[in-house]
Image (tube, rainbow, N blue to C red; front, top):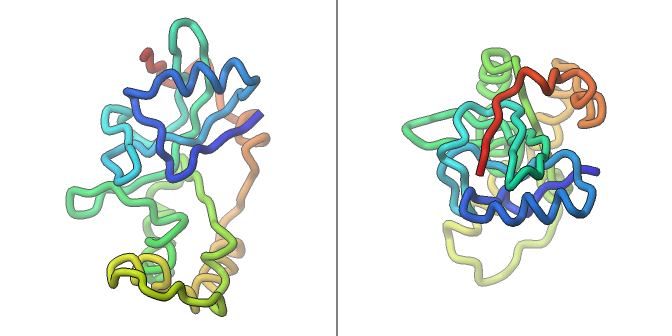
Length: 169
């Protein structure tokens, strides 16, 4: 019923992926990164908010990852590397400002400060993989205390899908 492509990697040029997801019975996708991204990105998507994506009449509900523009770049501060990198006070401040729609995620490895380091990683990759691991669990606990979270099923019920933007690919 729900799907997210690795690395938010579905691009507009890969609209066939939405058709396949639809044919497989996926109703809600969370694969869109609404901006430029190393693994893909959907720069024409616009604001991070739910939408209906229509490819040749096959419609799928899209709940894109929440992004914020910082220095001309779209970043995800609610999960992954930027969640580990930024101080909690900044994450909380942005979340309060962006609270109309926030989609978060967390990888188990982002919370494992004791994980072994992969030898031979280039310096940039090493930084991206390991920065902020020691404080990530505490940040997540604060986030869960300071905000109310719901799952995709409940979000689906709360969204008025008749009123969301429609994207035809």
